[in-house]
Amino acid sequence: MGWTGPGARPPYDGRVEQEVWSSFSHDPRHSENASLRASDADRDVVHQVLTEAYADGRLDREEFDARSTAVGNARTLGDLPALLEGLVAATTGTLVPFGGPGEGLLTPVQIEERSVAKWREERRSALMGFVFASVLTWTIWAAVMFGGFPWPLFVMLGTGINAVRTAASRDDIVSRERRRLEKKQRKALGQPWKPDEER
Image 1 (tube, rainbow, N blue to C red):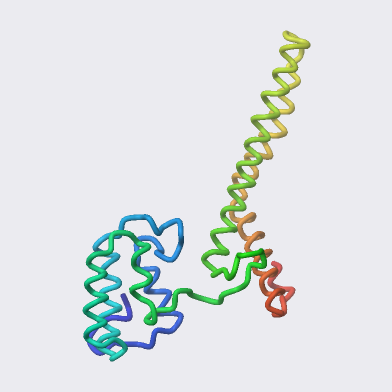
Image 2: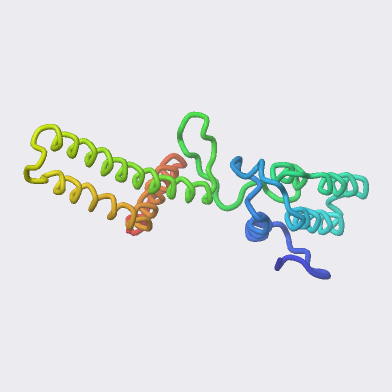
């Protein structure tokens, strides 16, 4: 990592903190990753931060030894963030309130995850609409006019086009949802939203 090396002990600003968290196999701060088994490389990231902190005098020998031992005993990614407490901020980037009850704050990473989840939700909804409409119309056709003109094909065509378009519009849907969330959070913070950010 760029923040290591003899004599290279930069302050733990947002850039360095981002580099630390991104060095893990999966971000250990996220609840969905907490139960994943930690690798030796994950533990090495923590060891490196502890070593830098000890060299800077931010940890005494006793605390350094205690945390280092705990790192060796860590089994899951969820065990690791607590060992970096007071050394690396638990969040990166600008935190923004999500606005929902009990939601607290969201990092830009979490906003991105929610934006992608929005696209997946729309894709799933479009696919389910295609399947449901197809099954329903073919069932009606078979019961009422079996052997007649296969009009359900038109229903399948319409809903199928929508499903394909939604699946192919990942970037547009993610970008639109990201802007919506960021605009909502900035409004909650009382920060102005510039018109050019709508594009």
